[in-house]
Image 1 (cartoon, rainbow, N blue to C red):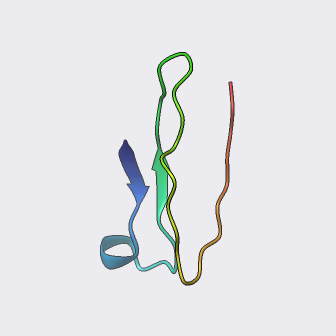
Image 2 (cartoon, one colour):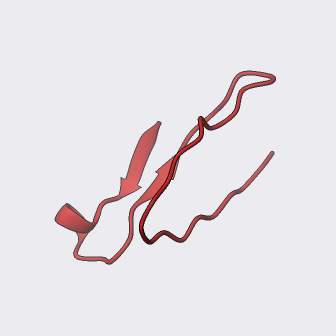
Length: 42
């Protein structure tokens, strides 16, 4: 997991990360009170 943009250091209102999964990998279940998510799949 690599953090590209961070609201605490980049003066923005969102966090943007890049995560590379092994074949068959997936994001573990998670929950947020408020969130916007973006996925870019290769």
